[in-house]
Length: 287
Image (cartoon, rainbow, N blue to C red):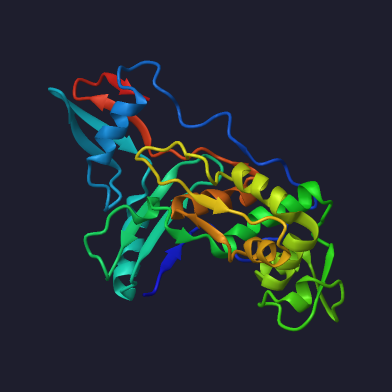
């Protein structure tokens, strides 16, 4: 069964900056309620029961006897375009998340499955393999804690797409790539060697959590927890994890946030979908 995860906003050719900022959750996330009477829990219930499949700009909901309008951050045209492409290509499973890297606004959350047409909210399910998205975590650990720079050379032997013991367990290598080149080409041999020889499972686990793995992502509607089980004291397994072949799963929304951290100089924004909720009388109920 094929699995397709589209993470829009992750650019393949991104050169690492010589110096990056720590990965942190933004101190200025989505505005919180201070002038209305709906709390996060009640807003979550309202949004989770609404149909968001077409990416509406606003939804009309009932809260008790009150008619409310929720203003959402969706780009309706973008959501329709993504859904059209997913349906046209007849993918088995697909979740697409598009997030503004600098604000945290969620512009699209699209789902499509030829295998399970009734599947919903695939972009919020954390059952997809992190794969090469996890190389961002490995690169951040190497740059911030191990002194790597974009120009740092990593030697390897043979095929750069493979993670093999003859390359990982020895320093030799007739070929080499800079960290920037390896990142741009998603070279498994380069990241496997960095993971096993420079970073290690302990530091990789620490950075995985700093990027939001094994930690709830605050979002309405709820998003599944991304999991990262990083092995330690086994160089080959550490290498596989660092290159994206480990026991690591995430949601497309989380993947978009990780990509956004590269764009936003190491800051991963808190995502938000609801701008505000207003009653039919014009009274602000949540912002």
